[in-house]
Amino acid sequence: MTAASTPRSLALIHTVPGLIPVFEELAARHLPGWRPFNMVDESLLRNTIREGSLSRLTMRRLAGHVWSAVDAGAQAIMVTCSSLGPAVDATGPLCPVPLFRVDDGMAIRALEQGRRIGVLATLSTTLEPTAALIERHAAEAGRPLTLTSHLCAGAFEKLAQGDRADHDALVREGFEAVAGKVDAVVLAQASMARALDGLGATKVPVFTSPELGVLHMRAALADRDHVAL
Image 1 (cartoon, rainbow, N blue to C red):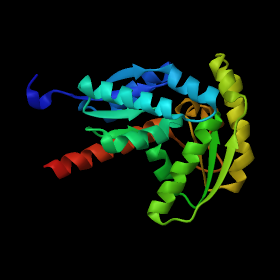
Image 2: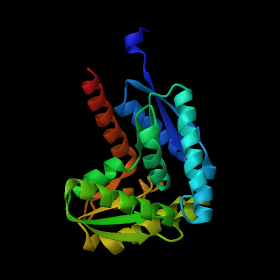
Image 3: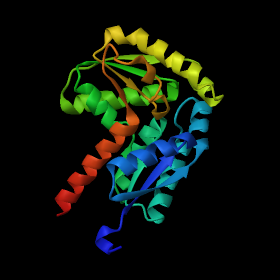
Image 4: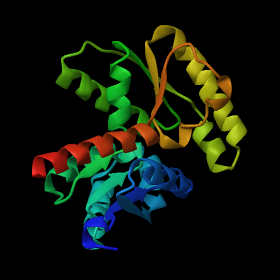
C-alpha cells in the first residue's frame, strides 16, 4: 500500500460499547479513506447521570481522552455521546486535529424542516445539551425556533437492563406526545436511533445522530481537504 492510499486514522470515543459496530459500519460506508479505532469509557456517562449534569472533572477527563487519541495517531476524532457535547465544544479550540460531536448534523438537518423542533431524550443530561445545540445552530443561521422537549422517563434504565422492547415503546410514546406539535423530531441519543424503526412512515420527519453525524463529519473533512489544497 502506498503512502497516498494509506487510510487516515479516525478515533471514535464512546460511552456506550454497543454503539461501536454501528459507527464502524457507518465509517466503512461513508468514510472509505479512513480507518476508525475505538476508545470506550462508560464512566464518563455514568458519572454524568449520577451527578445530574456534566461536571468540570468529566469535561477534563474527556479532554484527556481526546489528547490520548491524538497521541495514538488520530487525524480526526468524533465523540459519539451527546451528553458530552458541551465538553467537545470546550475542547475543540485546543485540539490539533478536527474534533466532532455526534449531533451537529442532526441539529442542522432538523432546522431545515421548519422552526418547530421536538427533542426526545431518555436522559435529562442529554436533553438540555441537545436543545442548546439546536438553539445555537438556529441563532447562527438566523432561523426562528420553537423547541418542544420531552424526556422519555425510564427508557434509558430499560435499555441498560437489556430490555430494548420496553425502551423503544417508551420512545414511541414520547414521539406520539410531540409529533402533532412540531415540524421535525430529533432523537437526542445515538442509542435511540432504531427505536422508531417499526413505525413505518411517521407524521413528521425524524432525525437521529449516528449517520447524520458521520455525514456531517465527512463533509467537513472534505471541505478542510479542499481548503488545504
